[in-house]
Length: 131
Image 1 (cartoon, rainbow, N blue to C red):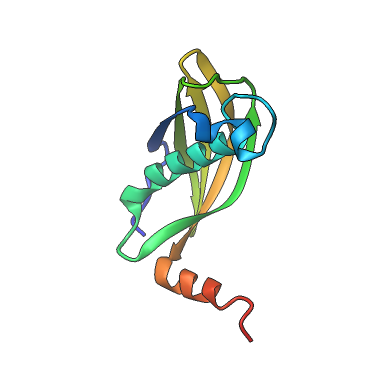
Image 2 (image 1 turned 180 degrees about the vertical axis):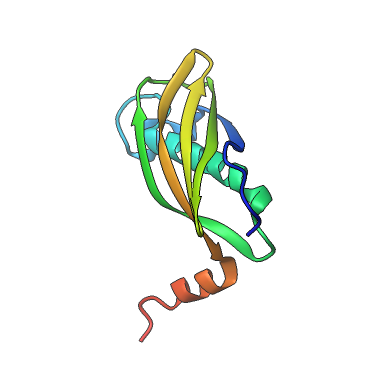
């Protein structure tokens, strides 16, 4: 892992399409952008923020996400997330995350990711449940 720059930001964008609505993903009964989809978009922004600092074979895994979903987004509206690196402690990366629709901020919170070696992590995970 290369030395990370505190304050470095990443972004991710999507649209509140049918497959990302609360009623479609099972997180509610309304036709609004689902909280789990906002969380996934925030994680994508975090991955974008840290990716320039990863070496070959490295990736990150999310280990903590604490968010507030403060405003609903209607179907069809654009949604954008941003993540900012706030601290690095060894292989643990802390970030602030925020999400916006076309009308303003819809959510915010904190997120932690951990740098791992992709092949080793996947191999170890695949062994779960095998005698």
